[in-house]
Length: 247
Image (tube, rainbow, N blue to C red):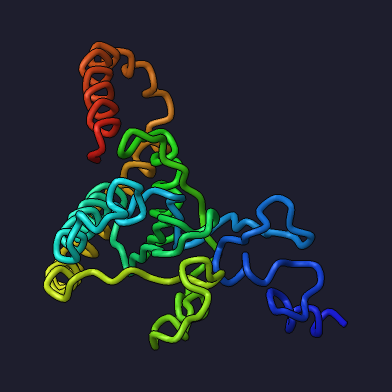
């Protein structure tokens, strides 16, 4: 019985757990869903909910005032900014995807898959205290690790009849030039990043070993408190920048 339950977990046959949430990390029923949404306690992937605002979906641009080229440039700038911020601040990004759906549970969602689970956890904690484009960021760990299962195959073939309200991901593509730049740069930096991470972890282990060996050396830590004013100033400046729509 246990083997059978494990084999159907997260599938349509599972009457307890929501298959849509398991595959896509989102469900159109939300908290009203009759099945369980098992939120992961650890994952390589995070979801930034409703963070991308597509200008073509706004009332002002409904008359076609924004050209396809301008739209692609706007999207590429957004993608590059978020991708670069994730890598520079939290860790190596394996994959990043943006939903082009219109349903409330998927519209503007950004999924970032990190190489390491601890980087994803660190990102969620920090991002939930940050703003972007004048709105607070809502970040959470996502169960999605294989985007092939989450994507709408009909959409990829240009045959989806459900349009923007499809319950599977319609991923918005970036330009080929930006893809080569971002992922090519990542491959070049991968070896350097891994070596740096390895050295950092080695230093942390050596530091912990020294601290355990010292025993009574804890009295000298009080002198570092005077730098708090500078840190507070940096945090205020960072919050102002995020509220203005930039990371």
